[in-house]
Image 1 (spheres, rainbow, N blue to C red):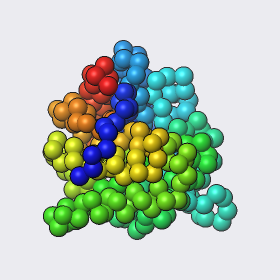
Image 2 (image 1 turned 60 degrees about the horizontal axis):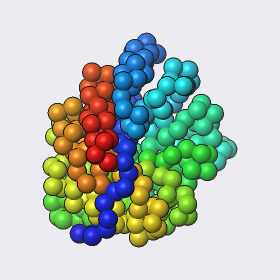
Image 3 (image 1 turned 90 degrees about the horizontal axis):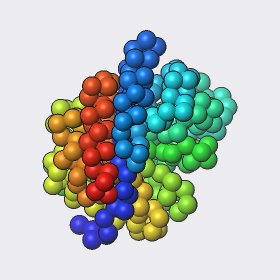
Image 4 (image 1 turned 30 degrees about the vertical axis):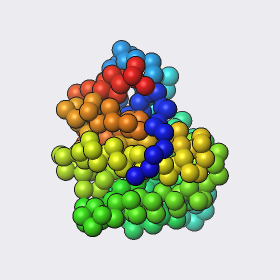
Length: 264
Ligand code: PEP
């Protein structure tokens, strides 16, 4: 395992990934509750929600000027053109979008997205002024065969090889073990500590500033386990799926990040 210095990020970043959930009415209730809930959180905490494309305008309208930022869950790897059904990074940016998740395991698996395509998407996001949240993670089988580091390294290096040091220093990395996503059981604290230290080392090898980017943990984060996972060295926040669909669950997770804030 790497002996790189631990994260120097002193604020937690908590991002909700709504996946293919939502509706105009329910979104309004949820987004308003998040805006209200964030008013009493410590200033260092950063929170965002990645919504389905049709709700970007609604997120822009309801969240602008609040402490909740918004993002998309995917992007086209192309700039523009005859790519039916695709949405470009520039289009997303038109709606005040801050974040773009790229390389989520559901995209890698169900849409056969490979490492190079994910790297291109990260590059498109950065060119449009968005912050890509690059997801990496191993399957249960890969973990069983002790391939975790090899898999993560291949996924991450495709992105780092494509980006300049300056670009890579502007991204966010999310470690999302595929076997933990939606399972109800997160990865254990010891596993997360080891993997995040490994990822920190890989990032730092690209450049000092890259070694300091936020590295999030994702996979069955919930109010009951968030504080313990956020306290792990090199965990700079979380990517939250199911629990981001309810303010009653998402806000306590954010609060767990706020609780870590003073500790740095
Ligand atoms: C995700 O899909 O990004 C995720 C973290 O999902 P969940 O929190 O539901 O495991």
